[in-house]
Length: 545
Image (cartoon, rainbow, N blue to C red):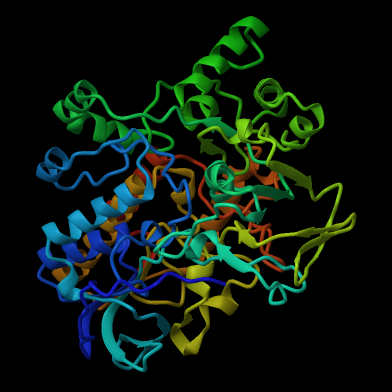
């Protein structure tokens, strides 16, 4: 499996023996944490496996990689001057542009001097006698810190497919989450691609333009909408920058971290003509939220959701003339219950003569061979195979580290039946351990930048409260945690989300408990709950003098 080449120009730092806080991960969460803790007068070190900042946008360099939130929204709000000075180029920026933004932030605040690159954290054990976390890395380094903050991201622990024979293929293999930094030229090659989640949907049209032949192996089709991406116009940039504060407040109060007018009607109370016109407008807008928020009941009522489902199916059949291919591309689960995608000519790509779709529901995948991929029907020969098989979402980046709290209790073992957190921020039995956008928070159901800033601000306010009031540790109570987990499950049960075998449910990882992990109550409501808990002296947490 190919891996990125290290960037020889990246700065490196030495790990100190102690700090007030250890931050794991130098993505957008880790960078903002470092900046904020510095302003509080605390010492912090960030430990990062990559060779530069960026997190998700450092690692995911596959062809067509692009964010599905508009650039002017997918950015920090904590520095108004930086909002005005950075110039976004596209409506939905590509990975290089987002990485450039991350590097701009690191340069602006001189963050790299406190970031240790090329280093992976392997273990973090809580020392009860000294009330500190002992953090160890793959290189044998150790650092002691009062606070451990996991800024490891929700989609950062890549998942390889469970297919026999992965090591037998003689050609080149690539994983979308570990794309070579120098890129890949597929010109003239026969390529097989496994997986049609977001990375597959984005990369397939680009690879198809290069490859002599591309065969896509699809287990479950994705709902995908056209991104309508384009260069940003000067007038729309000026309009947003002229009223950023109002927009940022609207982001904080919205359901998805993307402000849209709240729906007022049921999909079932309007005529089919009106409904289709509304869906058509959402389709043409190039926004996922516009479709998901078209009516009050699309996310919670099966009959209402079916109206959106029929609309998308019709669109797919319009875009893909071959009836069997179009049928294979039509999902049968409710719209929005797996992460929808934004694409550029995804469905149209299947009209190309050099692109072929294999439906693994009809033709199960058997093994990878020396020459390519064998299904129940035949063997397909390739020069290269791309695995677009996603991530062990939300928990993988946490449980892959040997985290042990009070009485050497393992976080991974504690979560064997599913993640248990309070607010998605902390877990009972693990004092002074904070998770940024952890399971039990809106995280992946939101504009991540909005949720990241909210969590970082909340965590830093909590640390400041400890400092000011003379407390040593903060830790969720078991009761508050249990009640929050029950609340998260209850909110999910009111929706259609549990009806799909999604990575929201952990269904893409064999043996992983089927639990709906994000909080589906909305970004605005979640923020209110967090603020109320803090205002009540951190209700549900034990604060130890």
